[in-house]
Image (cartoon, rainbow, N blue to C red; front, top):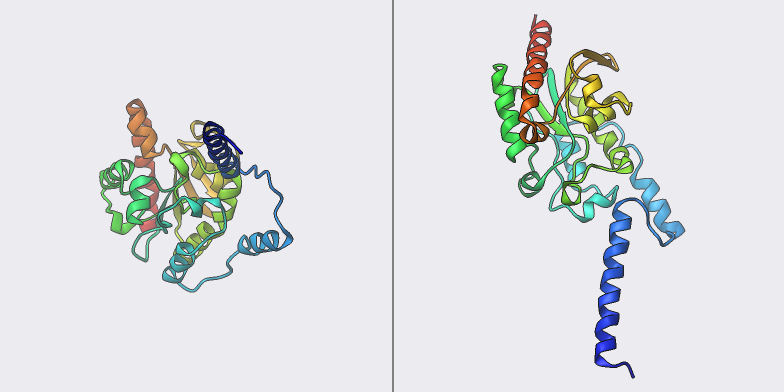
Length: 236
């Protein structure tokens, strides 16, 4: 018979082990091998969704997505947002707490700053499209892992195909590296006009970074002025 104190210790150990395994699993390091059935299900769910006829249909697919581990932690997935047609798309990293609660991109403190940034170049949120690389909030707002980014990439590609924006603005390193398929730092890529699959791309700092580092706002403002110049060129 196990003593009461030993039972408590065993229970505590089991809970700690479960927390450790969940922590490792969230970082792409599962300890237990998957069955053939689970592997096939995972591989099937990670295939490209294929051409989708509308943003509304794409949103329904995103809301039901279970392609990576992030769905286990979310309250809800967060599709992109904007009215059509638009020629300018902003791409961030992923939803935060407020976005996860409301199901809308960029509605928290960083989103409020982004709204001000858009207004600073004489545009409104309704005139642009706003989305993220990953559509579910990573635990504790950590950066998305590589396999999570790749699981969500088809959704981002479908958004771009359906909206057909001529100008992309990537916010922060994750979005910029995802779109340019490089590992270069945002500081190495911002400040110039890039081309990705025939589209113009301007990289700048993520609003959350600007909230933590107000000194970078001057550089971000220069980026935004370039965004406005390129936007005006498209409107001619």
